[in-house]
Image 1: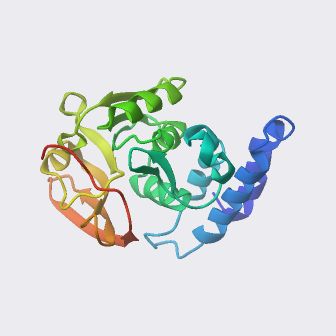
Image 2: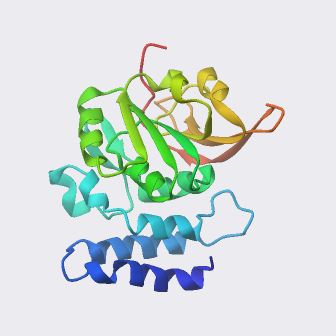
Length: 236
């Protein structure tokens, strides 16, 4: 889909809500900002898919932030959600979603449900989402927010070990920084699958990695860009 058509699509998608949704205008403004950032060479790994922006234009981010952050819901920056955690910057959500290439019929594992916003974006793309959150109050809140999605299943647990009973997955997205790529996640990734994960120390800038497994099970890792995520926690 060409970027020239994106504004028209978003207008059509959001127009019915303009009179009753006070967040429609700021949501459109955010998508327009992301659209401006998204332009780049076709082969660039930091380029955002225009289809992803259309999907994000349908997801009400204000429903996934605490009440005291509502005024900032559509700013292009991370926001605190309690328990030392954050909802990711919208640009990073758009980029990671683009990198995992969600499609209808796929099974995607998300490590770090957080507020539930990233899971909602993936679900809106048509994929079947399994999402794990280690912090019980956040897991409960996210499950409540995501209850309207029949293609999202959540649970509380240590995401380092993945979701073995539901594996293998077409894609895996990790929204917390690990010191290295967890072997259980690689094992649960299908041949031909994609894993997107920030790797590095919690005290320094991390690197967002795209990990691809080929049909023979060989792994190729590519660096995308520097990022800053909360650390992946658990007993590992």
